[in-house]
Amino acid sequence: MSEPTEPKKEPERLNLQNKTYWINTYQKTLLDANHENINQSAEKLEKLILWLWGIYSPIVGIGTGFIQYYISLPFDLPSYVILFSPIILLIFAYYYTTKAQSGESIETDIDSLRKMREHYFSSSRQKNRDIKITRIFVGLSCFLIPVALLYAARQIHKPKPEYRFESLAKKIDKTKTRVSINGVFPKETKVVFYFDLDPEKREETVSFKTLTTGSIQTFIDLNFEGKTLKVRAEWEETKDKSKAISQIIQVD
View 1: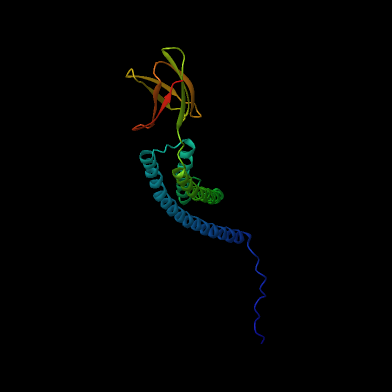
View 2: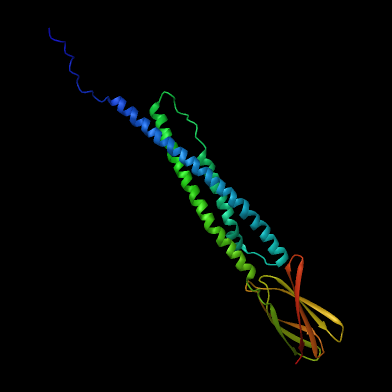
């Protein structure tokens, strides 16, 4: 009696539904790994941002105050832009790094798997964009911080401009003297000229505002009959500090 033979197995066909399931599962695994990498990168960038902020911000804040108050070196608008732009960039970088770490809530219908899948992919793309923007801001900050510090150091060691004036005095008639003044002073600054009208023991003051170039070219007619005239120019360097230069001129 012959042994019963097993029926011949037909090749197992790949179920399209199972194939789609495993593809989606594999995609989700890759996306989860990508999310984890993004979160780890964002955490490292966040620490770097806070470290840069904690060091650079006090240096700029205290440094600018010290320079303006003790060294009497005023900063113009471009200087403030160069010095404070890394701080602004770090603020944006911190915003995007926290945004990259945060997850978005799913508001689609739980029964709609397609919408949930699209939302999941969209969230992944957004995280990638946020981390790229964060890297750009951090990179710009790391580039601008040494540039700003070098700029500040150069401004500190930059030789101060030499302010001066020249004056000539000439008799107009027996009682009047014309004084011509040509000088260089701080830009757009009020300069007060004091004329010591010796031997009359009188003093006359005249004030002018310098041009955007800092120059003054003018003349003043004084009731003065002497031969020697003392002129003093005075202006404010800061709110609490003034500076003056003097000269004695002979009347022709």
